[in-house]
View 1 (tube, rainbow, N blue to C red):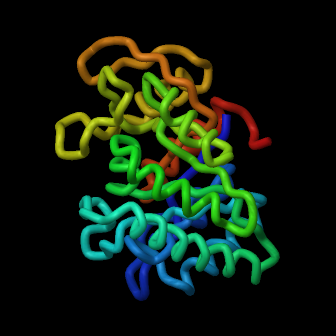
View 2: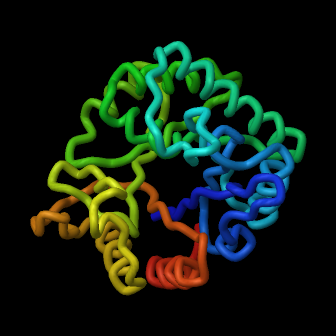
Length: 245
């Protein structure tokens, strides 16, 4: 099981996250591309840091919502979705190439990610951006209780799919992560986070916010590294799951 982290989210003089501390424990870096967080200098710095640790490079594109950290939905046409994803992926891909690296996947951020999972037109807009890339890209997308439509959409565009689950987020009975606006949506206890990570990695059921059992298939687990407690949780998950491959 791989571990991935949303990273490179500092902007100008504002610092976000503890990238240097989390990078040694993860396999995949979802690098902000400037629309919700990050800037060109941060993007380059994060690419270099990931490559130093042998971590795969992924683009983390978002709605153009810097003030709202990309967590607010926007009413955009699917063609606009394709263009804004292509724009962000292209920028990071060029920076990666200038450092001798290559972008391997795309994981949309925040509201764009959630909207993509519930709106097929938005998903199609994202997939068109990936399929028009000059080099192959995979889509990292949220696993749910039923991934058939997601798999079919990726297959139509010949896009490899990476299914992602969250170690520190609560799930509902449909296999969707619970909105941050609801109490209990984010797990805070390191023990709870590690236990959920291990269950997901071993194919065991997790408990939903409604108190029922849920089985999810996953290729990678998202972890967060924005404070000392989260870094400790990431370290514990890495130790529980074994060394990086």
